[in-house]
Length: 256
Length: 221
Image 1 (cartoon, chains in turn green, red):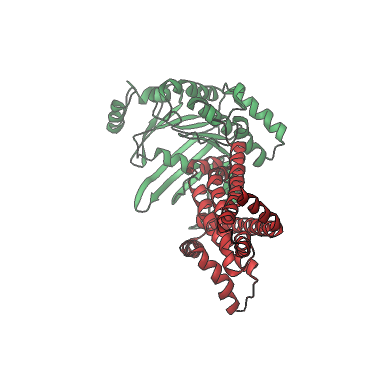
Image 2 (tube, each protein chain N blue to C red):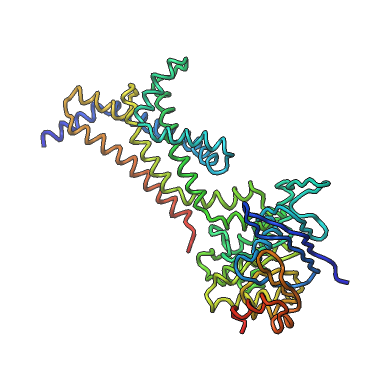
């Protein structure tokens, strides 16, 4: 019934001699919401960034809907795809960042429209309509013509999510999207993500919000030292961790 | 009082010389700023995006030019180029020297402006599928422009001041004209002040214009 959306096989990544990802395998079905947890330095953000080629990787395969991401393989040789190809593949996924990364010289609506107009070649007024729809969806219809500097952190992050979602990506990547927010602003962002999950959006979230991961995810992946240490249903994993590592990690995290 | 009307009288007599000098000064400045800025953008882009070899060559160029007094550049451009068969008139040689000087400064300004933009901007642009060219045109360059506008205006004002050095190779710009006028009427104090005032007016206008553009392009926050 459900079909495979993302397939990661033996993903390896190193910075110089430091190996950050030591062979990650993971398969994701369409419509799944997967949270990736783990202590800092475990490679979770790096893995997420490999999926849209913000990081180069040295070994393994990433396939999105069967399409090989980033590299051309023929026999044993491996070549980086062309910039143009990679740009096209990046548009298949959407990403929200810890630091929002809105374009400060553009209004909220212009931020959302940029990709629609330049990548999807949409006409300006059609793009404006789509942008307004998504800004409304994240509760910011009235802020469409505000600049990022005029918005709160939570509002900026919601615009950033709208900017990514408006491109109708096959998969959304969230990289610690609430980590830079004041505590009282976290809720509004998580609310938006929950809404997207309810719509059936396929999502991969790197998060430190254990309570949220528990509530929203269909599956949780626990990463440790560059490999997937444990994965499963959040209801089981958080209550009865199978590995020592995860038990330790949960003890130090804010879940309880 | 007698003195002042005599001074006004001398200005009236020399009005065409002064206006011509002013015209030449403005032409030299405008040309060297435009050419220097265009070159400077190329220099800046090479410093940020060039491969190792290009970066090295351009780095040597800017460091060398910035470490050389402008007067030396002006003299070299006029006297040295002719020895290798490139015959330039004093005006052309002078403008070339100033443009080269300007390009090294603008190059550094462009480099600084681009490098000051957080990496996250490029990543966000990539993440929505923009190519490098698109990222540069719509995300990086507009931000860099705002960032380096004040420094660029400053450089423009410097070029106006540096244009006086062309008097040394016989370009009849404002300073040389002023000196000629003084050699006729010996009113050195008055006429140097007057020339200084005219330079001030030019630079003050440039600065006001810069502030105006800055206000117009400011991002609301």
